[in-house]
Amino acid sequence: MRVIEAMIACTILIAGVMATTHFTNQIRVDEGSDLEETGQKVMRILNNQQLMTQIILDEPNLGSKLRSLLETLLLPNTLYNLTLRSELSGNQLTQMTNIIDPSSISKANAITLVNIATVSLPLTKAVNSQLDVILIIDISGTMYEPELQDPQQRSKLYFAKEAAKAFIDQLNMTSDRVGITSFSDNGTLNSPLTNDFAGAKLVIDGLQGHGLTNMGQAIEAANDEFASHKRTSATLAFILLTDGVANRPCSPQYARQYALSESLKAKACHVAIFTIGLGRKSGSEGTAYFDESFLQQIQTDGYYYSPSATQLGDIYMAIVQDLLFTIRYDIISIRLTLVRSR
Image (cartoon, rainbow, N blue to C red; front, side, top):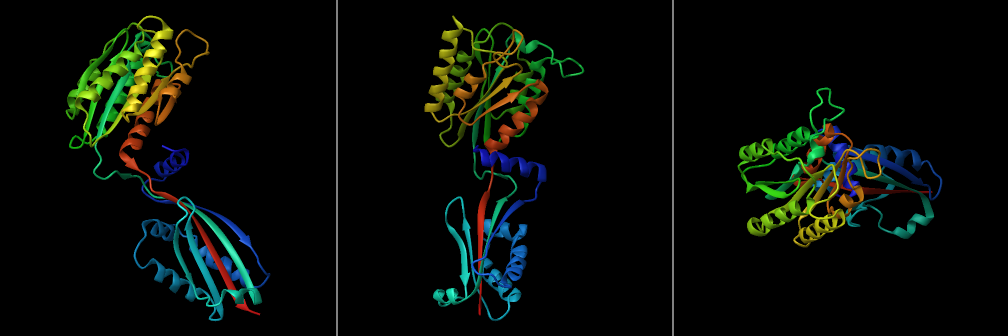
């Protein structure tokens, strides 16, 4: 997800089902006249959320509606030129004018106003999409530590399991599949890709570990599952959650390179990689920490930082939104020139 998309997505989630529109006004007066007041009036009416939404959706008869609106607002002896352009694609969305001879503008009172509208529509489910996603969950010893921000002092792994199950609840069993991989001293494929979501959640409930952090073997297990059972029509993704650094097998240096190598294999197979770092970052006080730079390095579609395990649910929801929904938005420039004979 690009930065601008993420910002707009946050706006949509807060606003609910309503589209959002933000306007920035710029006015350039080519020659001073009483046209400015008229132009401002027209722009205020064009600064309309419903109208901007209709423009993005390319609704039929929009041009005739705009022309009728202009001719209602303007005096009969006023000439106009209205252009709406997408600043993202560079395409002209619509253009209308009653100016027959553009050279006549220089001999008349004229004003040009420019409006910039950022328009975003509610999230919509991707049409005919299929998703094969593998959840890679750290079950090493530090994940059993209590979450200090939880009044009940439940473990970090408890919240990781609840967040993973809530993620699965958002999937569609007719089109999506989920697999489970975990890692401690070893990386294990706990559940192959399946649309038996109830069974997958039971597998998550039963995850037990302790030990160290063999991240590379878990990514390798996910790669092997994709290689054997992926659907060519599906989007492939894995979500890796850890509160530690790769330190198995062998030395931490080898373990890190092993995990990096397996992530590169996933990237080469067009797997979308999301990573989540939980708890303290490398360099923080304490013995348990994760390597943020490494998680940023191996991700392709998003790295998320979760200081507390209680925030994992929100992060998994953000990722599922990214995978299953599309965002429609545009930045539209509205350029209006009004001309009246001297």
